[in-house]
Image 1 (tube, each protein chain N blue to C red):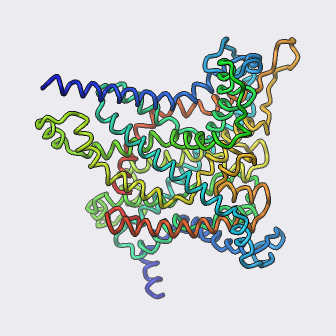
Image 2 (image 1 turned 45 degrees about the vertical axis):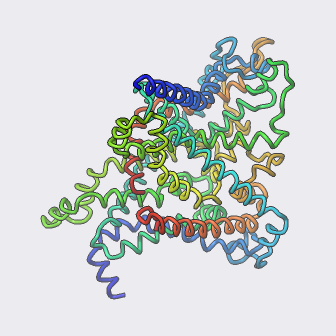
Image 3 (image 1 turned 90 degrees about the vertical axis):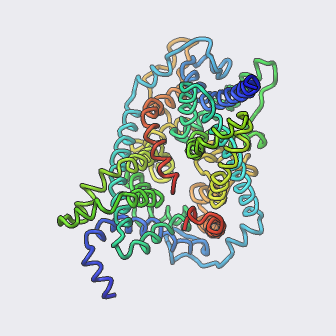
Length: 304
Length: 295
């Protein structure tokens, strides 16, 4: 304790400079952790944190036995797997072509356009979906009509939404991920290419035997890091595309949308907190596991 | 021999141009649809639906939007205010924290780094956080609820700390010998050398404020406090009506813009970003690759 006061006096200014940040995290991150207690209560607004009735693990039991938790977990993980793998592979392909193709103007323009979606809000994605798939006057139905086909009511079928959701997630991250892979490609020494050219390797062979092997570590690292967050959902994306459309929930409900609805639609605080706590605990275990794997293979890239 | 290599290069380029062009079009198409939708006549939408290229160009939707722009102007004011204040305050706090944690002589830097980092690993979840803000802080329908919660991010602090660590000690040491205090060193020496890092984090912050609709959706109830994206969301969901000065019954074949009005609002709300981002993108790419080397 004496040491602490000495240090505090010595580095008064440093402590003062970081104090607002520490307060911020204490209030907005650590104080809510106490609130996971709601998960074990039947929450009432008047009762608040400690005045609500304690019901033990009942909320978890319901989530588990009703199958809700299993469906949410399955959806969250499957969507994330699709986002991660399709996204990374497309970004990798774009980066390889953008680094090897001739034509400066073409590359600059296309890269800029691909980066555009990253900068717009998810509300605009909602506007796209409305414009494309609205039953009465969406672009898709206009086209079907012009071809003499009957209109298709997207809001009565669950099947297309999986692809729509994956499309827009990949769409939004394409430019950003491409930049990361491009940076990795740029760090490959020209000497490899020159030596391969002298040996008569064509461009396909150079991509296959130089670029791809050199990118594998980056690819695996990015995939691993993303897998650590596989239980975290893209709330903005799902909410702007699906909203509160209950018809589509079975295949489009993820943990984050369920928690949000518990709060804003069903007012089931205890149940929502329980689902959120489940997500946090298993998410924590996942990140720690992933980090242990990275630490073993490429220590300098470990998160902690 | 030479012809053979050229052939494979031609094939490679052909595949490359095709794939990149297709992906670029896929990225661009949704934007084009919104823009073309906003320039279509309402009657055409009702009769035939949205198309990529409208039969006739109509400015009705924009006329309607600008006939009574008070709502949009107000939302612009809210969003610009939040973005400017939030980004500047966020940058100041983030860079100070990053500076403190990058000081090697500061004994508690590892402990405090962990205190901040741990929040990215575990959280209490949305609901306890919501109850904190509404019940314990009393920020329902307050600008504070839009401003404070996204001001400081753990990843931004880590990025800043790593960036400042890479500034050579010799620069700060000599200032220290001359008797400069910690804040002076931060403000006069370290901050000016950290501009690439500041630019990246500033962009992240500005984007998150500009594009926020989630916080407004949770906390804001008065229409005059809606930020831009949330206003757009409400209009798209037909939960709010954009007030216009367009009379409904001028002639039998005139329809006041409704569907097209949504599209025009989307354009008016998003436009600035689309025009600004080519300038911003360059700095962003630079900063991103700095951060990517070691996150």
